[in-house]
Length: 171
Ligand code: OFO
Image 1 (cartoon, rainbow, N blue to C red):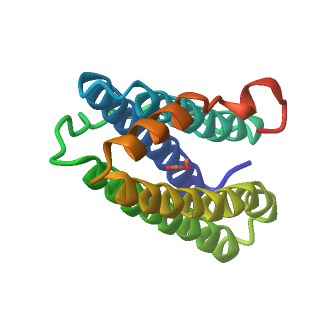
Image 2: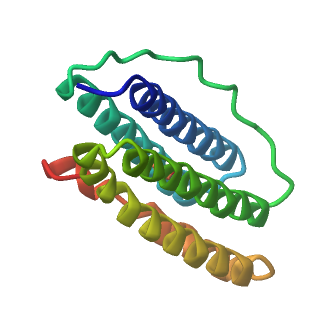
């Protein structure tokens, strides 16, 4: 049984994960339009991973006999000035999501909800990885911005990105 406050907070996070996926998918479509299919691929994969995160919340709420309440997803931004701006926004967005996850953990401690606290630990670690990856991507994109050759190579590299969690039951 979930505390009402926790049920609401988990539903809000389910929505936030969906919104992350929507934002990254919007970035992917923008990059497709800019003829950067590799970059677009990696953000499309990232969007799929965000939907998987949302489904983890969905499943957990149901397992705890709670009610899933789907909310409207904000229309994502569609234009950016440069690719660097996209990757800066990804980093800022992931830092925001980290703070949301930490607020959920704080709530689980306040409510002495040990099960939810344990469920959330996967996301605490995931956010460390997400921010690490976002920093790394931003560094690479900044280096490639004045070099069409590097940009091309990076686009090739990102074109190889696949969703590793698709074939595992864990992720
Ligand atoms: Fe769900 O980790 Fe990014 O936002």
